[in-house]
Amino acid sequence: MISPDLLAAKMRAVGFCCTRCGSCCRAESDEPVLVMVGPDEIRAIISRYGYSWEDIAAPYPETIHGIHGEKYTFEWVIRRACDHCEFLHADQCKICAARPLICRTFPFMLDREDLVVSRCPGVGRAISKKDAREIADALIDRCLAEKYERDKIQQHLKNVTLPRGTFVVIDTEGMKYL
Image (cartoon, rainbow, N blue to C red; front, side, top):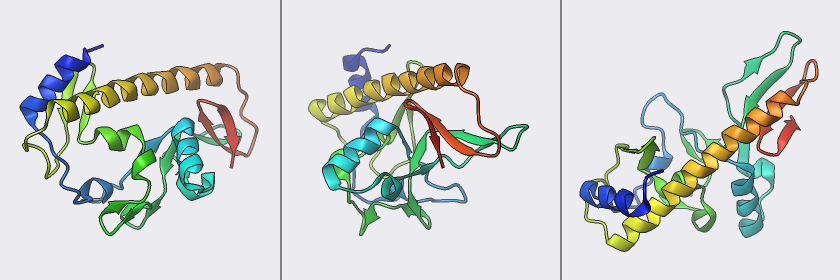
């Protein structure tokens, strides 16, 4: 795994300062805004803001259909309202203090050790060492969380028989019926 200091240095070379425009929370094309979120992140939002699971999360929209009428998907996404995140109001995030790691690290992601930068109006602006390090730490946490999620889902898949004619989400906690 890349060191946080090296990652922060790469971020500083790119530059980034959030402009609070909300464009990361809106669909800019025919592609929907899909904010992947794990059970721990959903529970953090519930704990902080009092929403229910159903208020926050929806099943990931791409599903797999089994031969016995079962349908399943992996993980969750933040609910959407039309073309934007459910929690975006007047260009402000209503769950900012408990927002998911994918939101905390935007516009950055890691592809192995390569820093990938998404299109964003804030890219190219000066970023402090402290802010770059905070995003770098969060990005490493995100990568570790995503690996943990993949591994746990793989474990669950080995030990589960999908019931006929059901729709389930398989996440880090196991199988949830919808």
